[in-house]
Amino acid sequence: MTKEQLFDAIGGAEENYIRDAGEEKRRKSPWAKWAALAACLVLVVGAVLALELSEKMPAQAGPAALEYNGVKYLQSGSERYSTVLSELPEGYSFAGTMMYGEQGERSFYTNPEESLWVYVYCTVYSNNSYQPPKMAYVRFVDARLRNAEMICYEGRLYIGMMTTNIWHSEEADVEQALYDALEAEFDLAFEGAAPEGFVCLGEVEYTGPDTIPNGALAGNIKAVVWVHPDRPELLLKETYSHTYKEPGKLEQHHEGFEVFALYTGPLA
Image 1 (cartoon, rainbow, N blue to C red):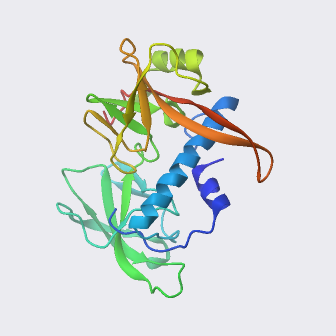
Image 2: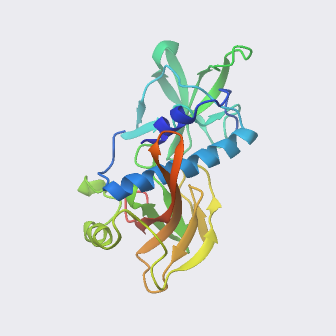
């Protein structure tokens, strides 16, 4: 189940604007599919909290990608949870125009100090019939970062094994040997208690979606992190889920961990 499918399944959230705030990257083992559902549940909790502070924007009739200076950019967040700002962030300036679906030619803005993001000025529509369309700045993010789950610990970046790109060697997120070793030892995620020697660091400082976190303990996801003093090549992130025999009938609560590998990719 993808994050977008889970959002569709829970439904019921009022579609308002957001304010101020591709392709399957890899295969998943059977247990990793369970962990992916757990990640979705955590994201749903985070999304509900975010909606208390921000408005929500529905899907736009715009392009899937923007090419600029040889870099591919995708709309940040997801079609249902996009990043939309009422004001252009400081440091961004006009860079050109692009064809934005049925809206035609629209301006986009870049910041030489922040090459990962581009903003497109376009009409934003609400599914709430009482709210008229408005003009706003929609964030696009470097496709290499889009949906990547990252945690920074003591200045080192780690990426979730389930969101890791290892298929294109020139842009691989993790060294192949490390990926293979961790997959053999833990799979992409596993159920049960933390292995011996791992200690809990607590919850990360949340930096927001589609960002590269930095600092002592931060992440672009909400997470509780475990480390091993002699294993600097990986982190473990707490996760949980429920399985069902029949739709709507609770069967069993699962707890476990997703594996995060040391990131050595192009955005490091």
